[in-house]
Image 1 (cartoon, helix red, strand yellow):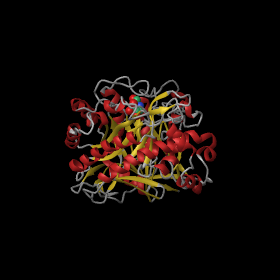
Image 2 (image 1 turned 135 degrees about the vertical axis):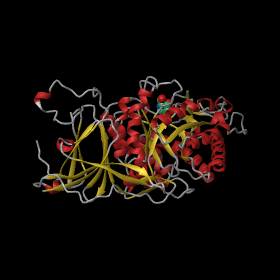
Image 3 (image 1 turned 60 degrees about the vertical axis):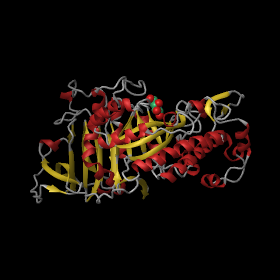
Image 4 (image 1 turned 30 degrees about the horizontal axis):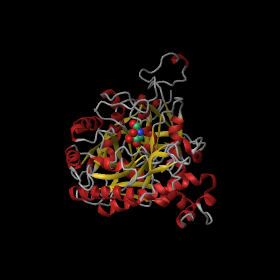
Length: 550
Ligand code: DGJ
């Protein structure tokens, strides 16, 4: 067993403000800021992490809200993502009804929760289900895509000015109303215009209007983005032409709606993606072609400047696939945000991978008590037991949400969820330090010990672990996690030296009178508590770890 020297602690303060957030600027509009390749969602003037939850699709009625808040509160989520349907606010053309929106915003304030509104308009999961009847049944006025073989698709074309104008009019009315009821308060922090766009079963529209545009010259800004020479879509993009053209057409349509809405109330807006295989082993006719899949994020950036990011809805259960999605969406100019992920235990651990990449937020889908489970994508039915792993994760970050968001934006953060193989993972923190994450470990032993074989740690049958780490500077890290052991190691630049944990301080965050998050010292971990590494079980614990060498 390693012998670790006790340290005489110079610091006698019991509380220490490690990162006081700047005084919050009430009434400033939510926005997304980026610098040095990192992004932050700024709410009330300071970085904010969405510890979110998305309600079920048909929970957007006042009658369902108590069942939604019950879950939001149990989860300790700070943000609710919930639909506002076109059919609901404009059941008769030109007549708007915002009673649901009014009640929703009022109840969100009462529940101390921010809102992300999901505009289910022309496209919801690519289809017109949430269009009002007067629009979705009138194929002449609001035409659908024509497939290559001349038959009609279920999906509405992005080339119809009628549909665009009608959707835009309703969306603008919504944003205008929001400005009236929430313009000074910012309960609503983001808006998602449309939901999972694209088209299944037809890579693009082959109708006459679309054909005309497809044969025209590719716009100059697209050429510039892709560094291509002039030509029509086929000439410029070859085998990708159909999909790229469709992505451009849909992104432009959404952009126009978003721009008009932002003129009323300038909230950040994003699109969510029905994903394709992130390893690229799928053809465009087998996924939602034209949606913001990883291969056309750039097209959305150029065609939809009013859209802040393309955000992945992640329902892949396998850890390698999940991590790959994060990798391909976490790229320059595309702030990482996971607006939907499976609301089931298997998925919970990926919270660490998402937030560890400095994401602006994360939200499991369908976690409300309206009696619906979207298995096999997510859970079979929502129960308190299903909410528990997500709540336990939010309990780690909630008390230091602003501190974490600021560190993610201005310093460096790291994190990883347990992999399906249950094997240790290594994270390079800097040239000086690495950290090993290991799982299914007894606190005072190493799994490799032969005498422990056949004596597994209980309740660890499936992967549930993960850790989050923030660099505080001065060889000090803020560390938290669940069902994981952390062992810091010497990095490449310090080869030959030996690592010693100078000080491992356990503490917690409280809010001071100004609303700032303040670190409160509880105790120093030493002896058994650090001999085999820093072990986290399901208790919410936060450590400040100072590393040194000898
Ligand atoms: C992704 C969609 O965006 C959600 O609205 C929902 O339909 C889920 N899929 C499936 O439950």
